[in-house]
Amino acid sequence: DWDAEIKALNQEAAFVLRVNRLKTDVAAVQKIFGEEETILVPGVPDAIVLKKRQNIGARDSFKMGYFEVQDAGSQCIAPFLDIQPGQTVIDACAGAGGKSLHLAALMQNKGEIIAMDVDNRKLFELENRAKRNGVKIIRTEKIRYSKALDKYAETADRLLLDVPCSGLGVLRRNPDSKWKLSEEFVETLKELQWEILTNYSKTVKVGGKMVYATCSILPSESEDQISKFIEKYGDTWTLTAAHRSSPSKDGFDGFYMALLERK
Image (cartoon, rainbow, N blue to C red):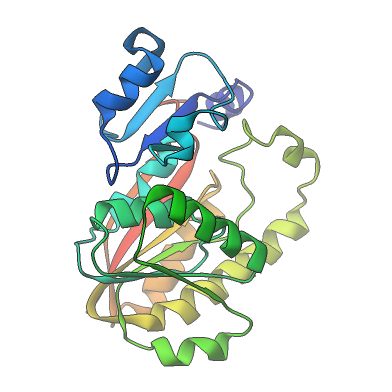
């Protein structure tokens, strides 16, 4: 499918919103923009595609936290984690927190989300976004070294690993990145992905679940990493489901997600 994916990744990306169900619903957000100016996405219940690109940051409805900008492919990841209200969830590579906010909405603001990252600036942005979204269950923590994870050993009901990757599934949004990538950089990323996967998986309780996700269309960053993990840790982990969103087949950004359960 490489030729088809390359063609799709050279097209303009759709402008997609994720409705924040803690504050409103899809029908209400459609009315804000006009039903004739919006498209719903089958199978992605919180997604609305805007037909025209626009500055939504100036809108009162955005400032009130009614919606966030998030691709439909990205919106598939949080529900894939099979979360329930009241659980303890670790978002290990939270960044500015788009998926943390989605998790909080799915959890109905009940439980705890520990959003981790190595960048304080991104976590500060996440805290501001959480306030705007009415999210009260997110706690941020900067992780400086792997030893800091010891206190979280077997404490999480759910773990999200949206790991650093080449970004080859989201080239439509960052077209310049294709000129910056090298095979050496991808190899370095794969080592980092493996380190994150093996270290953070220890935070999951027996019977708990984790999702390993990338925004890459490369199997070497995605399926191959999970195959390697199951080959090494198959006595304690089971792969229960996997999914890919495809720029060429469904129009979403290219994401991979694997759901694993700790035996």
